Length: 354
Image (cartoon, rainbow, N blue to C red; front, side, top):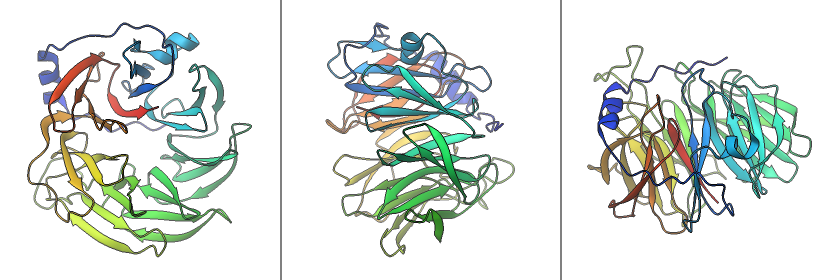
């Protein structure tokens, strides 16, 4: 069973605890599922992971939607949620399962087991999907009709986010509890490894832009002491041509910058990420896909753990770094002005829009 690296965010927790923010959570069941789903990681070994929901039209909100709909808790450490073919796939890392829910009502319709540490899901078609497994350095091929594992493939250390492009599966190998610097490329016709692309240190997130190019965010490494020093490997942004598998651009960060939570706008032209000296959160940065340097200043200069960009209006959703109790999301417009805040669960790490 994977145990996460202990949170090194004590100062953030103190700051968060001192803030008083609006709580506009009505905790009602949604009339429809059009809105934002908040992936609340929960605290390690406490089985308090949850999914919060806020309707786009303001008609309903709920801080623990899965529990209220299904009558049971979700589990221990919710790593990610992906919507595919009108279903949501919830990778519950420490509970060693992927929970499948119906997006009409969020009721559980299946559970995928047989994995050690499921991290992320990627869908191929109505019958096939993939789940990365951090502990076993594997990616599992899933029959989506039966919710069972039908095959697996070995990759490098700590596979995280994946994306399907040009009949290939691109897998970010984050290093797990160590370091890695590769993206594994899988030929989906044969489900075999066809290439390995060398990137910056510890790639974690991957997105496709408006030109069809793949952006890989590498968080870098703090070394064995987890303390920023000049000999550390800073983060980087890599742009890959998915047809030729060549690296077209490599944008370095300084040694004390460790970006996470790569997002891209709906038009595929603007990247967002969190960046600070800690690999567990940071301020909100924004840059265009044609820029070749990291912005000197953040768009929103606060420390966050989760990040999401609304595909319709471009609003910025940020989750606070609190792992001991329910906390808040903060919503900003695309100029970085605070709109409002609302209560969510513990440790919000990402936002999924439907």
